[in-house]
Length: 86
Ligand SMILES: [Zn+2]
Image (tube, rainbow, N blue to C red; front, side):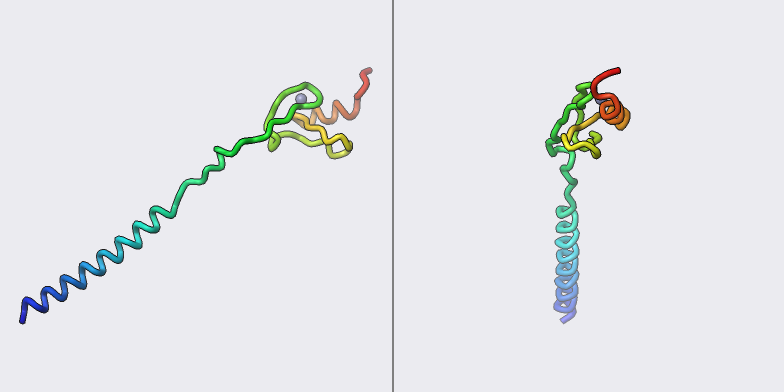
């Protein structure tokens, strides 16, 4: 009768151990690293100097209606202030 009790305790312990292990494995596999860096970025050209840069880093022409992109706010102001030269 003693062995039956021991086997019952061991069976419960194994069941708890397996349950914990399953939960732990599911949590570890669900955490995947994001692949944001693998996304293709659209490249735009600076309307002032012709430099190619990602559209996320580009400065858009807020005042004008051409929808041009610039590599920096300085080039945007230069292009808008002095379009035809001195
Ligand atoms: Zn530029």
